[in-house]
Length: 96
Image (tube, rainbow, N blue to C red; front, side, top):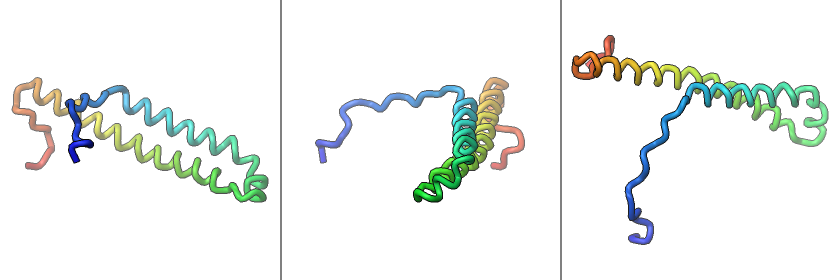
């Protein structure tokens, strides 16, 4: 098992503009769906109709992802503001 034991610390995760990244990916999924939609018959004839529905599912899940990362970003900002205000990092409206 020592073969798989890491020999160095893992790097810190990258923090970028996550909302923009997820929004961009969601737009790409919906564009792919719309581009493939005129070829519905071809996809159906060749057994590739799942490509179309995969793009639609990707766009739908992307909308859920946008909602999630916007909430996460707002919670991170609220936590940072609470810490800066010096009240111990408590978030207003949070139970506990």
